[in-house]
Image (tube, rainbow, N blue to C red):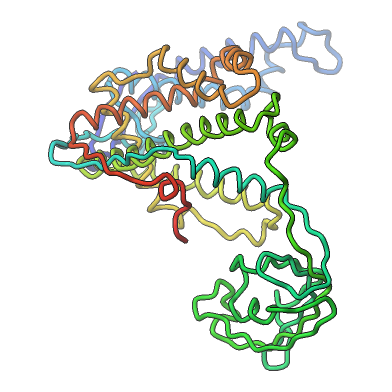
Length: 436
């Protein structure tokens, strides 16, 4: 086998490979001979089919397979010999201008992984939130659990904040009904702010059987673009008014949330432990986000286009699959890899930087780190030991924890290089969902 390497660009390479045709013909003959021992052709017993007939019927297919296998093997051998780190998949094509009749010549165009320069992090400041779980946070969580088990009882009085009102309504714009402007038996919780202000204001003091008509102007930035900024006329009928009844925090309530003893004190203890774990993860997440962003910002590298294209394609396919699972039709899912290119570039860049820093500084996951993470995750189940054993039954079940351990090692390394400032914070603020 003969090889030569050309540099086409900063990362792009062309590898020219020539393989003697005699080697290919020899392998074709071997495969046809093996095939002749088992092939079935009418009129001949197995193993007695003339080799010439086998070659006539199966020769083109076998030769195609041998050439494909030879190209792949030759490329792999040449890459090892040249000590190349191939990024993405090569584009294999016949060599332009090949002249030797006794050689199979082809070219492989591909990209190599870039050189990565890790930057200086000594001037980076990372803010680490510091917060505690207080009695008020536990009480707030218990109140949220009570609301999960709320029951409603119909009342004959006028509706008040906190009540659930069931209505039928129809909306029209310029005398024409519009999509999404009608509903029957629609529940509205007064005071929660889920409806537009004009809609909820129209329900103040209503009783079952009341009818209301009112105008409503949709905000200019309303998510339904077809009605944004327009004024609709709504007509609604109140079907029922019901008041909320929250369960008492007692033994029955505690047992409903998995506290076998039924003791309210034990429920408080378990909730506090869970909140502390959530808080720990939230703080780790905020620190990790800053650490990884700093790593990427300080690193210098050229992105392999092939890896970006591959990542964008996979992101698009995952999104399409998710949307289809949610009930969208394939023809309605109009997503292309181009829509994900910017995100793909960020993911590829961060992945390359992380890989380099793990390699340079020996930050691979240690068995004891992986086991600690598995045990931590298992504590949220009723039988933690059984969960741990299940994860260790197959190596692939540990992949997620190994990746998490590596990530933590990288973050710890960054924290050792950068300046870390503790910032007082409140539990409720840290756990609040991000603003839309």
